[in-house]
Length: 337
Image 1 (cartoon, rainbow, N blue to C red):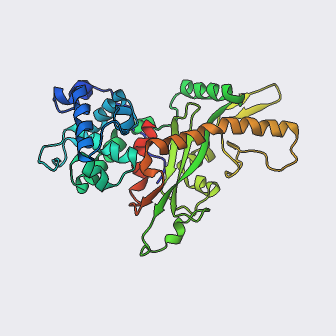
Image 2 (cartoon, rainbow, N blue to C red):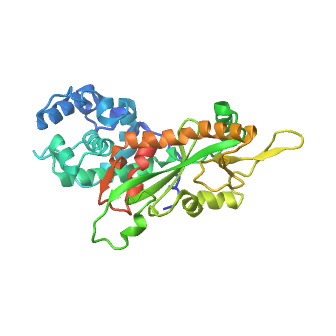
Image 3 (spheres, rainbow, N blue to C red):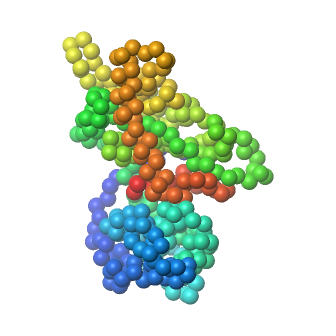
């Protein structure tokens, strides 16, 4: 899978406003909706809402404002599909469906656990969650994109330089692995083994100084290391062809510096990808550069750590996931983490 395609931003019209995203139900759009949901879950779990589900943020890992925006993105796709209902036959509203999907993705709990807590069958949880993933992939992907204007790129460079003085830096690249438990009957499972002997799928990400995702690449087996993974990405091809990271900044009369991203020592040193100096006996200049690079590169590590914290379904071991669909599952977490 190449970097996720970017769609142009669409202006949100009145149909997308929070007051209209619950299928016209003023009860759903009010605070009463969440109170009723929290009580229902507590009742189904024979517990009290105070056990970690007493606030909007603790249940969905996002604010109510963000939740309403997510609903506006998902509305068109999710409300024209197959009818979904709770076990008692009551139809699910848009809010109900988005809440169920977000709870599944942000908690990482099983289909059965989520179904029991919401009062619906686990097959409904699976169906609603996948429709939500499709909706967010279609409507929200504009949140993951490379800067489209010179002003945007200049702002990124300026903020990176403010961290530890690296000029003309456009991004930080890092990779995390989504660990999977695969069936022993699957053919060629060995290709999914990574350097830690886990079956996994790597997710490569380039982030900005504010930990916003600028480019992602995934879909290949765990056997691919960072140095080989990057060469299969369209980002690599664009940089090699001069379509990206080609502008130079003059540092002095004698020196100029090309745009670049930074990575750790697992990545190859390229004209547009700077990595740390290797070796134990480094000069003071090289050691200082490494310190600057490490301090700046940490934004990529933090962004991926936050992604797994927000989208807990990919944190830990995923049980026999559909490897063709897996890269699409974390797109929502990339956008809202």
